[in-house]
Image (cartoon, rainbow, N blue to C red):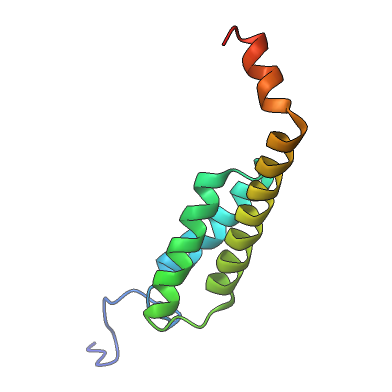
Length: 97
């Protein structure tokens, strides 16, 4: 029984760089759950930009981009707040610096 339509190729959804889009979304979600983890926000942003430049138009790439931006904006805002209120000086003095 020959089947001319059978191939061993994996089934993909047709979007270029779909793995990067998925990874950016996962990094964004995990970074948000871990209270604005800056390295994961950067990873989400970079991976989503690479996926979008390759032509990926999926919602996963967009979600990773948006989450990455939100994480970085909130991280910078918390850094500015903590520096302006003297929180870091208090922590450093408690550590003996």
